[in-house]
Length: 131
Image (tube, rainbow, N blue to C red; front, side, top):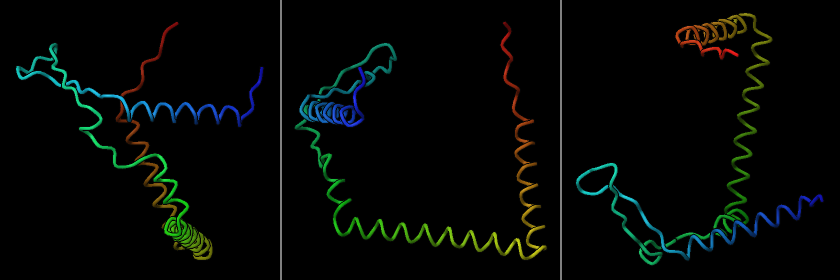
């Protein structure tokens, strides 16, 4: 029997919401080492959900994402990304036009690759499994 993607997503979403609700409502406990410092013995400190107040809920992110401020931040991020990509493209085009810049670029790439090769040589080889 095949279930649709929408059904699977809806089921996952409901399960996550139930889990979040249970986590927020349930009492939590923290395991800490005892005063003697023994790793084998632990003291359990119980805290209730009232002791640790939740200041955010799952929908706060959605509210900020679809608000005007969120839309503006996304637009600014997209604009910055586009400008960075255009600058990188201009740099590539300039290298293609200028043989000296292309030689410098190729030298940097060569040195980087040599450094990676040297790092690999310093690492011990992984043992080969025998059959």
